Image 1 (cartoon, helix red, strand yellow):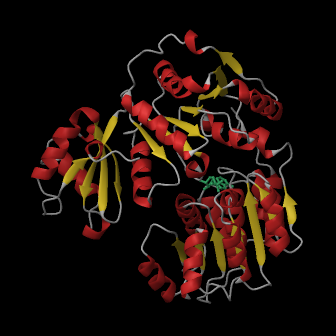
Image 2 (cartoon, rainbow, N blue to C red; image 1 turned 90 degrees about the horizontal axis):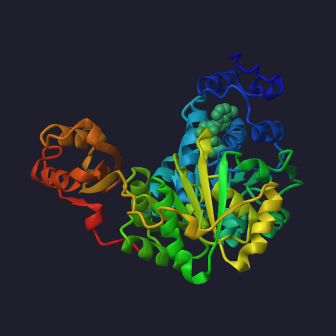
Image 3 (cartoon, helix red, strand yellow; image 1 turned 30 degrees about the vertical axis):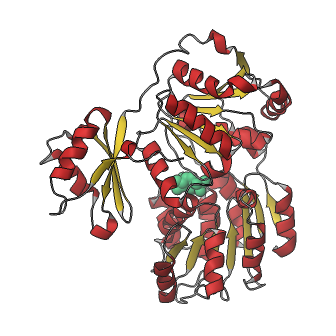
Amino acid sequence: MNAPTPDSKLSFAQLPLSAAMQANLAQLGYTQMTPIQAASLPLALEGQDLIAQAQTGSGKTAAFALALLHRLDASRFDVQALVLCPTRELADQVTQEIRRLARAADNIKVLTLCGGSPMKPQMESLGFGCHIAVGTPGRVMDHLERGSLNLGALSTLVLDEADRMLDMGFFDDIVTVARQCPKKRQTLLFSATYPEGIAKLSSQFMREPKEVKLAGGASASQAPAQIEQIAFEVSEGERLHAVSQLLRHFRPASTIAFCNTKQQCRDLVDVLNGQGFVAMALHGDLEQRERDQVLIQFANRSCSVLVATDVAARGLDIAQLECVINVEVTPDTEVHVHRIGRTGRAGAQGLALSLASLDEMGRIGRIEQLLGREFVWQKLDSLKDADGAPLQPAMDTLQILGGRKEKIRPGDILGALTGEAGFKFEQVGKINITEFHSYVAVERSIAREAARRLSEGKLKGRKVKVRRMADLSKLD
Ligand code: AMP
């Protein structure tokens, strides 16, 4: 097969970027601009304010990162760019991408300012000086109020996933932050959807923003053809139990079940766990540490069903998601497209299942209209294996009391399990180290024994406390 011919219209070479940046892009394997980059970068590099429609995975981060790096003066140790993001996960991803792109220039300091981490180290880091801050609105406000963050020298303000920040009630915070920035600056707003608040935001503090939309509509093109959408009619009373019937029949190894409310999340997790599934809730009432623990267990294959609200699941980068279940059809068609776009990535076959009561048929109709495709309807009682045993996740997670603070590294844990404790390399999965805890996924069948042997042995020359996450009180 011939390699595709590069399209010169999409080449980074036509952009006014430094030779070092061009070389860095090539090294990162960014050979061509993505559609959103091609549409926004020429304008953004000229200093235009932009309202750009873009989803996660479109390359939007590089679109604004290249613009803000272009205007940056590395010799000045002031915060010259601020990126506001709805969640800490997204802020972390954005920081990483900016750091990758900033490698071309000297010593550019990027800081993440998010809730859930102690204030003091962030204040100290700000005190040492930094060029770019990436954070969530609440924490950025905290720093502004305490005077640890000064935006007087800012030249670029970015609002990433602005629609989600509005969903989360950050309108006033965003306006307050923008008021503290110099009037003469560039503002770049990225959003997957355009709820009312976006126009309100832009009219308050953007200068003749240009709108960047991709031809064909970003939403429709976001629903990859290989996602099979199946709908099931349910009554209110059978909705939660129907989720377990779907899971038993289709047996996906990893599923996100989307609920419209936190309470529905809690109820569904209770039902599923009561039936022997390993399901965990992800919603806005969790503390940061609980949220991290849930995400670690889902990503390391110790939890097979994540039951989430849309806001809580936003910004998550979860690979290999086999199935999405819409426990209820959302009234927002764009949200539906976003939900199902999480399965079937990278050419893999995706399964999107929706439970709809008679009241939700109108919503289904609107989604079909938007996508130009119809749902396939099936009856719950036609599912053959709806009574099968729940599929157990492959792994189980052990929590070790000790993390970065104790200088524990993944290799120490892997070494302890495969050395002294005598387990095989293949029986150990993902290892995550946080500030005070470490988490290691091990094959489910060896979890108890692995926890026992790790507690009996030593890690970094010291005894450590080890517990199975499943033995800790269930997160709710
Ligand atoms: P984002 O939508 O910003 O989350 O980006 C999605 C992924 O695409 C990230 O892993 C980026 O590193 C990558 N990416 C961004 N721009 C390009 C490009 N022009 N070529 C190849 N990969 C890219």
